[in-house]
Amino acid sequence: STRSASSVPKGQVLKGINFLKDGKDPVALDDNEYPDWLWDLLDDKKQKQKTTKPSNRQYHRKQNRDAIKSQNFMKDKKT
Image (tube, rainbow, N blue to C red):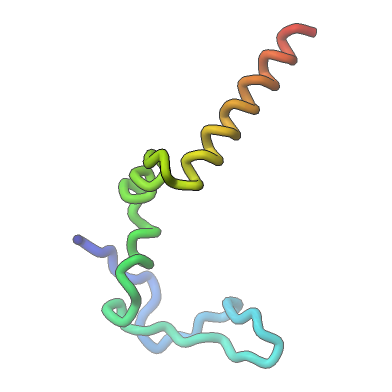
């Protein structure tokens, strides 16, 4: 698959990402040192495929949210 290049060069300190009390800000790695699934998060096409699989939790949550929105819309129309 074609990866987009990282927006941060290798070795740059990533300020503001640390969430540990005594931790240090992480340093960016080379693009090939990151796992493949990380790059899939940037691919809109792959993310849409995930949400169209009926066995996926995201799909069911989206379906439920859409159903609630349409029910609320119809309730507003009745008053």
